[in-house]
Length: 277
Image (cartoon, rainbow, N blue to C red; front, side):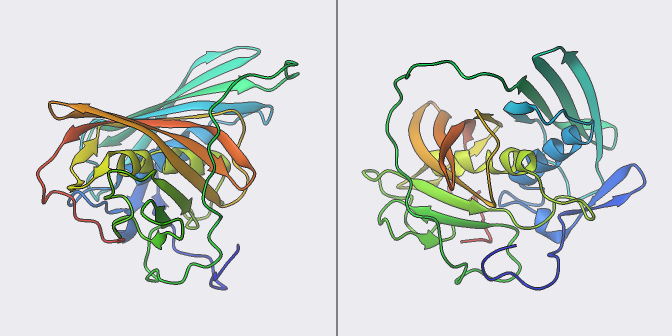
């Protein structure tokens, strides 16, 4: 553990109860009495990882579909291997409540190998420096997020005015420090599956605040993230008639590693009620 950590293990989002997972109070999201999308995706990523993975395979793509509100009630996870070959593995996961699927995920794993010679063009993007302190956050934060946009100095939280500038590039550094499930250490895959949901807030936040709720999100990765911090640099937002799509580049402490995207639907002005601003 790193900066400003307590000496004890922080509270996990879920605890195990037989074949169910019991959500703790910090699983509640900003759209009402339901789990946050990042919590749902993180738990699905954790569940997929429990099927057993070859360390030579990289989780190259994880897509999470947020089908229904996940209530603050026990949930179950179902996983199935859809394809298992020498260089590719596809695993699906579903989150169930009261016999209904509330969310699902698809994770595509690719085997690492010899890297091709030559150079390929890509757009240059630079993140703000990594945060050096977690000062300014309350102790009961589910995870830490710093927003950047109006200033490169940034601010703790996501609604500090940094993302309400129409003319400024938007960035975020995130730090997930709480275990997803009690008794299980955090992993890079869980971090990736968790942080993808931030893409929607980052790319769809505008001068009128956050007026979109995402229906899905996808992360892609050329390699596993290293360390507790994952950054996002917004690349695009396109919207029409209440439907929007946004994309970002993902970073860790070493540089860019992949991309993320989120599809979203327009919402009333007072629908978004974050507790971590």
